[in-house]
Length: 210
Picture 1 (cartoon, rainbow, N blue to C red):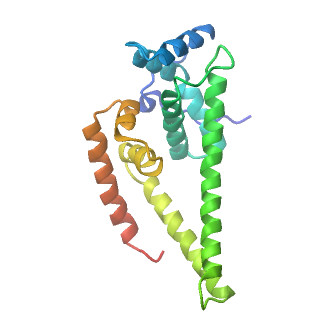
Picture 2 (picture 1 turned 30 degrees about the horizontal axis):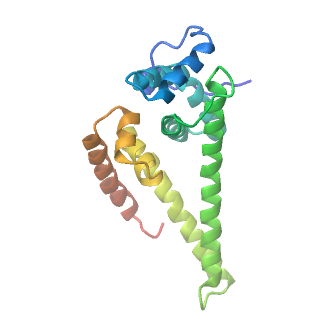
Picture 3 (picture 1 turned 135 degrees about the vertical axis):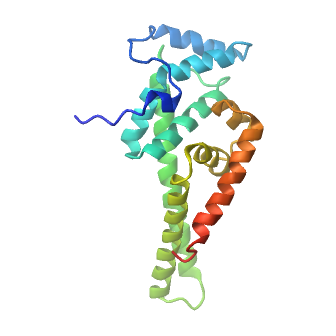
């Protein structure tokens, strides 16, 4: 069976993941330290990320067949893990099945959000006064083209800016949470968001009717 291409380890800020790794029981111990939210919670979370990030990314790639979407799902999966650290309970000693479940749910949510948006566009087009069926189809096609253009523009952002767009603008994640997940200062998150907004306006504004 064809394997998804592995994301370079340096691009994911991974350590050496080529070995067999620690026993699965260590995940449960790490998760307890994370859930306790003590002084070593962040270090334990970083270790959990380094242990499973490559596997989660490859799983996300198999779900989406998209490198950029896999990057986004990797970030949001671990952000979800961090934000629910006091509530989530591992069903097994290994965190990997739970992380895969979160990734799959997030991927489904992305697809459903796109489907809901398309349905809204169609309903609005049908309800518009003075529009015949041809007008509705044309309006729906126009909205879909605009949506594709926005998503394509996001995909063409530099990775650092794309991460904050997905987290802060699309995912409505707080600046503080995004900074902790990405390992950067809150000021850096704000500056990347500002640059991304300007770049998106320029990219989308080149052809507003496309």
